[in-house]
Image (cartoon, rainbow, N blue to C red; front, top):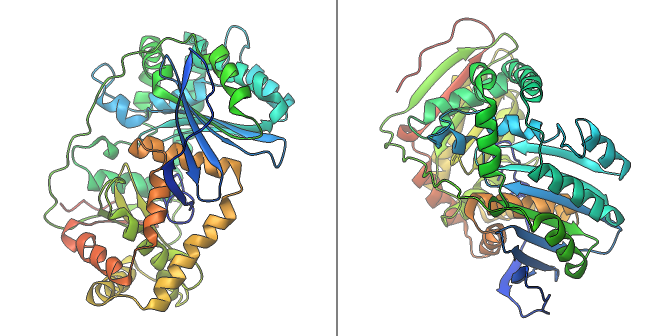
Length: 466
């Protein structure tokens, strides 16, 4: 199963399993922070959760096979928050802030952060923004933990917010926005969401519009930073060569004095029920053949139907024997055929890049035939085991990777409020049967609820049919 932009690895952002039980652990005594929980992962590793008095959460999985660690800071804020915030009511600032966080502080001016993390031996340093969260991450030799923590905590608390730096970064983000418009797939995704959602803020792109990007004021930026980059809206995830006894005193030293803030509560409005298929065609100058996206609304990640939907995605689109590959790519109709299931927005999506001289309508008929087959009878036990094996293959390929494990924990925490939710999903794979995949295909693959977006290589954009 694959999350939009985020890439589920295996079935659900990587495939890990665990017992999910609390275990009694040693006490890390402090009046400034508390141990919240310790979880036992399926491979015997321990995941420890702590919290400072100001609400700052810390997740740690200690691994000592190599003298390295991954350091990730996750903020529970994305483009849907700013769109719903009555003080902002627009999108693009969350993403703009991802860029601003590299612009320096009074102690470490513009450009110094990248320079210093590079000197520390930093690798995979980057940041991403999505509808529901923003994260910052890098991997370093474990002996550089304190220096990295000083740099990360400094920019979380003391960011340089000046008109000159803001305007400079607006220019860079506008350039990124324009490059996004040059990609047929990115534009197609934007149009599909606009087609599927009428009221929920997922219909607005994470990047915002060029006018919104250029229009953000310094006052709005300061409000956003103070409100959403607060310690009680953030989680630090550390995977690698350190211990709680080493880590927690450093966390208290560098994050403990930050002041919590009142985080606005902004529920996402519910969508009205869709009663008929929606369809839209657009054109794109960079498209060389037709591209088709088909989206079906599904349930949130906290719902139990996520489990069979994850395995259904693997059956359809994972591996050389996946059904979409067999009926679309191997036959020469498409050059790429993918399926993904996402949360926030909650969509099961088909993404088909047609071969030249073949059409989206041709591919859609084949997909509908596959869906009818899924709904009429359970898949064979052989096909079911193949899909499950694909998921387990991803598990054993990714479990040893510090960054992937941190991504797993962070994404599920931001999506569901429970960093163990992904482990719970994988445990529940054990009880699945082919009939469960048949059931969810009947429940969620309905023509009346789907939206179809087609990108043509030439010609005018069509009108959406709702």
